[in-house]
Structure formats: structure tokens, C-alpha cells
Length: 429
Picture 1 (cartoon, one colour):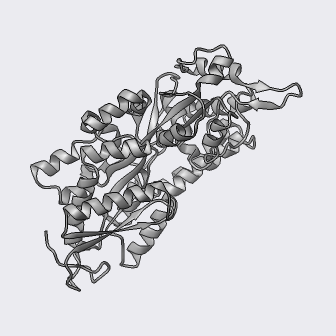
Picture 2 (cartoon, one colour):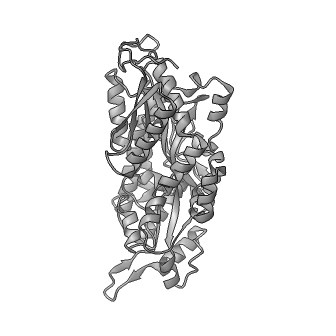
Picture 3 (tube, helix red, strand yellow):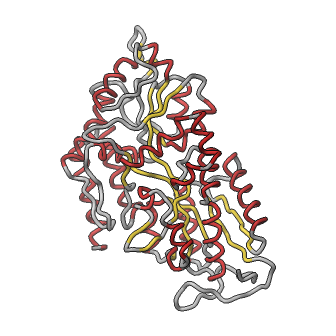
């Protein structure tokens, strides 16, 4: 490893990947954008990992920058890239891949991962997570904090409703029947406990993609240049979501907040909820009742999109920094750390061999719910990701909110979303 320090943002070569050496120091410094606000338990975990990595790799200095939400982090990263002073590496949404490629902001890992060990590392991740990490025969992202959507249920509420507390609904029909029994109202008709909650703010497209997958329809092409929002099966999936609130009345109508859904579960305002497996540690720490975790129920099939963040390496940074970032990503995703990260956060350990480590085997033996998201990966599909992804996703989110609030019927809402997505994407074909 070259031990010279390179200044990020110094003059790039015509290729855009190598920068001229500047101040000589003991270590190659890599700036690392991580999507969370400053403070809290996750930053302490990341800081601990960085300290351990630096001890094992004294020629590399890692500078974590906690950049806010995923959305705030990609804006900051792209702004820095355009100004010629990008981070060396960042954890950003796997769905940002096409946007980062289009901006020529990132470099493919294959350019560095040349050895047999490096190639085997790229092959070591769950295939479902690589669907949002590779395109055009190249690997642009490396899975790190990845997730699927799972169903959480309150076992006490199930028992009180006369349901088997150890049995989650396995189908759409069962889920509705359970939710009807679990919904409780007082004498005045006020709802005391909803049967279920599917949040529809923050990431409505992601939750919706679980419903469309279960209805056996895919929302976008693998090349990220077409969407299929106007297919009848898509509108059918949205009609089901709307009906849960407005027709069956087992879920609050309108928009349900992403951020408060776990709190509603803890406070027994809902007996079942759909949310990320990334909430698993949160639920385990805060639920004051026995709870269960299950795969999402099947419609025509089981299904969930994957979610979460990947490591990316940025263009316009020095080759030595990029190689150091590769080493850091490899270290952070080693089996023992992938396992520990999953245990500490609730995210899915991103490679099969992480589940064979002693600490993960012990964890799953004492907490079998931790393996549900892993087992569900066989039914998972790539999260919605296209060129100009934020605009395309906004078109879909706007359509979903219009249908859920009753301002459009599901069929029209999806036709309008498709029309807007088509307008955005036609330039990329």
C-alpha cells in the first residue's frame, strides 16, 4: 500500500480516476460518508469499526462523515463530486446505482478486485443483494447494510383475539382475516387497536413493491430504463392496499407514517406491522410484549424487495485512496463483521458465510427471528431502481399517495405515474 497522503479534489487526470500527490503524511486518508445524523448508537459502532480497521491497517486513515439521511447524503456526495472534492467512499442506497453511474461519480469495483481472492469476495454476497449492485457486467456497489421487509406481530394481541400467537398469516386472505379479528373499537366506534399497519410515508414505493411482487408483477426493467406502473396487476396491488384502510377498515385510511409505525406497535396501537428488518434490534429492545417476526404473506407468490445501502468508491479520487477504500469495504464486509453488524443493528448479514460464524449461530439459536429476513431472500427482488431514480420514484410515490388519500382511483394513479416515469426515462433508451 502506498503510504503517501493524497489530497482529495486535487487535479484529476483525463481518465478522472487518479489525482496528483500532494502533502506527504504517514497514512492514505479516505473520507467515508455514512448516512446517519451525528450521534447515537450506530455512529458509535461505526467509530469502533474504523478504530479497529486503522489498528490493523496503520497505512490507512479513515475519516467518517455522518451526513444525515440517505437522501441528504447522496445530495452532499454528488455536490462534492461536482465541485471536484468527492468523498473517497460512501454508503448510499443500492437504488442510487444508476444515478451515480450517470453522473460518472463512481468507479466499478472490478477495476481493483483483480486477484482470485478479490473476485471470490465479490461472489460471496447473497445474489438477491447483487441485483441492485451490478449492471452492464460490472460491480458498482458492495452490499453492506441491506434489508428486506418483514411482518412483526404482537403475540399477546393474537392470543387475546383468539388467534394462535405462534402463527403468522401466510397468505393475503389469512392476513385480512387475522387483521379483522385484531382490530378493536370502543363503544363509540373509535379504533383502539388497528389490525395491521403498512406505512406509506418516507418509502411508500418500497412497501408497495412488496405488494406488487406478491401479485407477481415487476415494476422496472433490469437495465433501469423502463417502468411498468400501468400494468393491471400493479393497480390490483394498489387497490388491495387502499381497501385495507377504506373498505376492510383494518388499517388507518390515508397516509401512515413510516417513522411512527414501530412506536404504534410498541404502544399496542397496531397488532401487526410491515417494516424493515433493520428495525429488528429496535423492536427487540422496546417491545414490552412477546412478538413474532415472519416473512410477508403471499398473494400469488411470496415476495419482498431488498433494500438498504451499498459501499461505493468515488471517481476523481487518488488511486491509492480507491485501493484503500476497497480494503476498507472488504474489511467491513468480512464474515465476522457482517455477522456482528447484523446482530448489532438488525440488518441482514449480507453473505451466507456470515451465518456460519460462531457468534451468528449462537445469536440465531437464542433469537430465531433473526434468520427470517435471510430465509426470505429466496423470494426477494431488486428494489425499484432506474436512471434518474429520484424523479421516477417520486412519480410512483405521488401516485400511491393520491390513491391512498382518495384523490385518484388506483388505476388512474398508476397510469399517471407511468406517464411521468416514461417522460423521464425515454432519454435513457
